[in-house]
Length: 136
Image 1 (tube, one colour):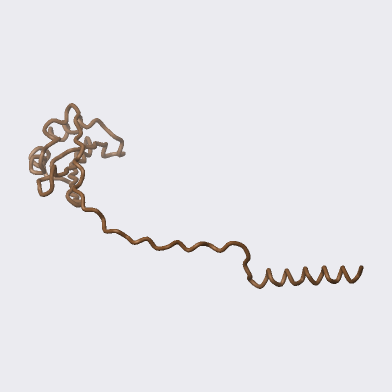
Image 2: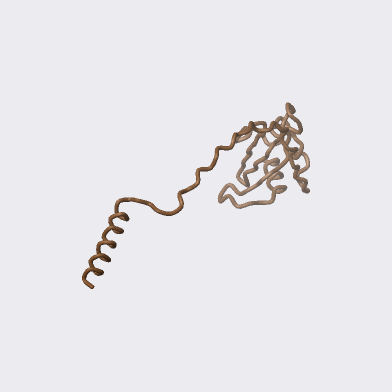
């Protein structure tokens, strides 16, 4: 009986020595084969979606020069690729106008408008903001 107890204890000690030595058992992680990277496909940019709503006449479809004539100098003029954002502001509101070219190489035209209060950034009626900025 003592012999069995000693052999069981010896086996346990050997197993614990293997575990503490850093030996890892079980499945090893699989190395994924490298997939060749293809060059991006050159595709023309998608046609811009044009916002159509009452009160936006004269703004949607306008060029940057048209917008400056209507609202004066822009507060911001940001380019990202061929897209452009002009920002106009007054005491009533801030108006962001997004311009995209209809085709590559063409002048960007206004396609989308966002309006918000200057004081807290809350959204306001686009047409009301346009009328307020035109009237200053």
